[in-house]
Image (cartoon, rainbow, N blue to C red):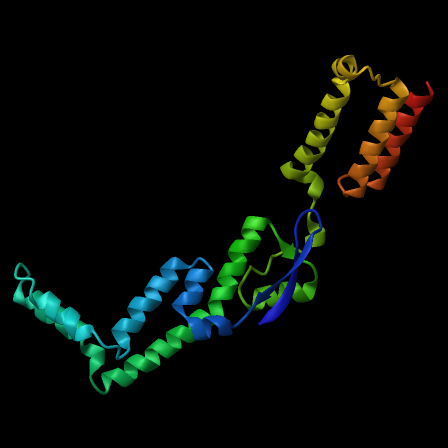
Length: 227
């Protein structure tokens, strides 16, 4: 498997793997269940049992034959289909077919899983080489943009994070009078502005605002402090 670096809208980088899954090659349906592909696991189990010489098919055919309400034509057809890969040379053809399908699933399951993960987490490749790998393994289309093309200011998540940050702290500051009544402590205007400056620095350190925006707001707060 090949490593690729992905990043979200806030610049958090993570490494994921894509390519041929040797884990699925050896574990098969167990691996499919582990990664959440329940339908794939169910398909593999039925497909393997139908085409591979696994014991027990004669019991199933006998059970179907005991269903008296089914027409004999249906019973004979079901028996023919279920036992088709239980005799030579059909058995060899069934083993080859299972191997081909299994290899195809092994080569695609990690790509499918990563595509869903990228869509859910809103991830993009960090560099061009990562984008080429994703395109080669058909995780995304050829028009995929790099993570640097993200505009975090245009996202609802970015706006709400900043607004909630200010709202929560503004509520804490505005509730100062009731707080000082209980504890006999008083926020002066200078102290409140100092708290706002500290909050502004935290927002800038988190990367939620640009340096120009930080300097503009800091200058405004300092002017309020001197007045």
